[in-house]
Length: 285
Ligand code: PDD
Image (tube, rainbow, N blue to C red; front, top):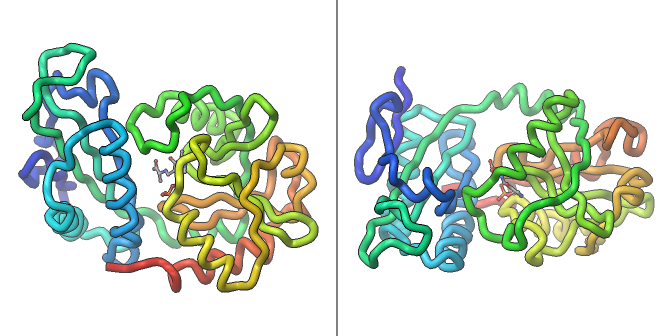
């Protein structure tokens, strides 16, 4: 079965789905994106993802390309046409096609919209979560507006590649004060020896993850104590547990940071229980 992509109003086999060479996404990374989890054929937390998309577009002064409900239809249709059961749907909107000029193109330039969807290995993800993953740390050298989910991801690409080259799954960014900001494509969390769950506040130093937002509700429902504050790498080394969150991994236990085992070096009870309960709190459309 050939994969199908939605490109500016048409559903096309991926090999025929193309964007213009002067698309501003291609030329300048001038665009935004969202990734939603698909579970049993349903899009998870779509409303929240579209609300964050709206915010990212507003921050960059890109027009919302169609009614949010219509965009929801496109997301679901792309999932359906690709027969995605457990996986992700990817949505990208750029400032459109115009002759290359750094300043914004003429008003009325239509934003470009691309949607793709694919299955992920759900059983493989469960197995990974049962074992936990390792992460490394890298300096956070990104711009200040990482709260915008922009497609300008070069530092994230380099960080993820550094992780791959060291045989691990993720890299955590460290700010100039030695504190963890977030992962290259995930939010970062620890559980202290006293059982408090710690994650950085969603100020401008991190992306306000949708998984993160929903997990705050799960944490409350489980009666856990939450502290939204930065934590250092040293504090993470001494933590009882660590984990990360993202739409594709939900809650993923982190069992080693820079080669040092966290807690007893196995997935912790808090992360495991949060992962188990997540979808009871997420919205499924
Ligand atoms: N990444 N921080 C960064 C830098 C991210 O790229 C992501 C998501 C997150 C978690 O956000 P959410 O919970 O909304 O997925 C945090 C997506 C999955 C990606 O780029 O593939």
